[in-house]
Image 1 (cartoon, rainbow, N blue to C red):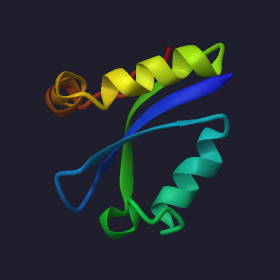
Image 2 (tube, rainbow, N blue to C red; image 1 turned 30 degrees about the vertical axis):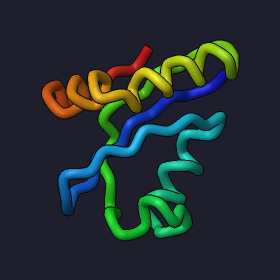
Image 3 (cartoon, one colour; image 1 turned 180 degrees about the vertical axis):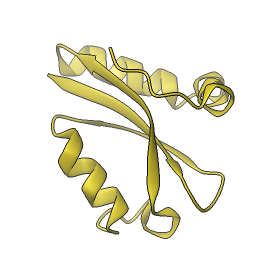
Image 4 (cartoon, rainbow, N blue to C red; image 1 turned 90 degrees about the horizontal axis):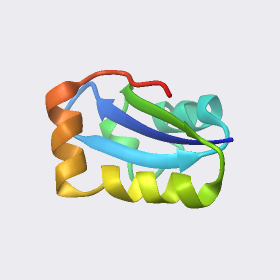
Length: 83
């Protein structure tokens, strides 16, 4: 299983979209400053979680959520979506 996730900074207007096989570990890395890209934006709230059966489909969904349209949906909905 692969997870596509979106997290939102509690401090600033910043949304990060990523792909992982271990969601708990990855969120821990983001919140504790182990990821250079998100270090200055921690801590985070989870906005979106999608479960996909393979990496190819997960990467396609990750690419969508990283587009302007995908980010706009995340900004307006601000919901946790588990599939």
